[in-house]
Image (cartoon, rainbow, N blue to C red; front, side):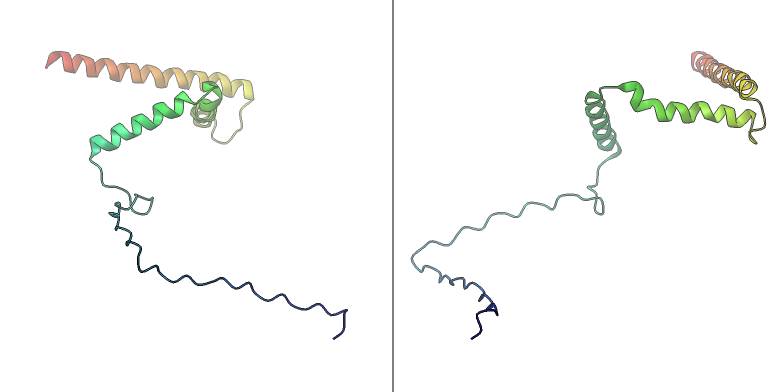
Length: 126
């Protein structure tokens, strides 16, 4: 044989184990119920889902070090809405757009306050 040609290594042989006839058979363990997955969620009542969500949100906020940074994208999207409302085509000067957006924001929150006052008055009357 030529010493330059490497020989293939044979696959390692694993010994087969025969069962020990004197050993005791392992007792069968009860099979736990399957864990819920996204494709097969656990059925919960609305109250249980609400409570689980509240637990999750408080645990998440407990791990948040910078609340402002975490909410910044949502705050920006909310405020940008008013700029798009007053200048949908982006034609206005940025200062004028900001001034109009500020008025649109004030109008929005005043309308919410009016709606809230009406609801409180209605509850008080009944």
